[in-house]
Image (tube, rainbow, N blue to C red):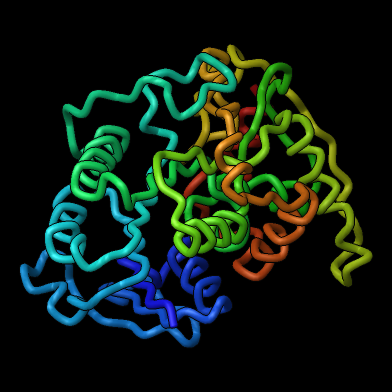
Length: 328
């Protein structure tokens, strides 16, 4: 039986990886504080604080696969020191944020990286942890450069903002979409690929980014998912009117790009046209699969309804902010 250790494993992506490994017959152990939730049913939880120098004492065994989810340089270094010699394969979940430039569409894994200077900055830390991992495990490491991860359970609230917003109905503020793209990967598609890559020994840096789609198509899919609620037993389909505003107007009215408070999620500056159009050729060649956009959007909306359409969010505009921007 394959033995898989996930450093984390009780929250969103880590829990999904654990579930996929269990489904393929692995024995799964999750090393975590346990504050973020419970592991997938069937996984063993070893509670540990990785700030503790003895954090790995109970997992110093031989592993077929170790999955590292942290971007904390200290955590990554200490895990490599404790476990690298005991692991047949190692996956570091990295990010496309490692790339120095976002203005060239379809760039692949050979593109220039950020030069780490401030390890409290996410891109810098990710590059640094990649280098630590590759140096320690030059022939056994997969650097999984994830793009925008989407689907049920997303703690960032970015992707789910749109189906939830269309489900509320009314006048929906949207950005100008011409020339804009989104490249999201469903959390379960990413987890399935990470499990497969570990099982088959895939190595090297790989962009795990999903299919690039026009932003207009993603917004249309969000609207269609909300409009299809009637057929799935929800309330009458909402009446919506999309109201597009151009970049200058949105910026002048205090709307932020991409994520966070007072933002229009997934909207990026024109000069970042390559950020959501990375090459995914290596991902597909190594067995990566992508479910249809409509399916991911339905899954996301179902999750939004379960969590509360009107809940406070980490990304997007509140109803009051949206009304204020629309009023000009």
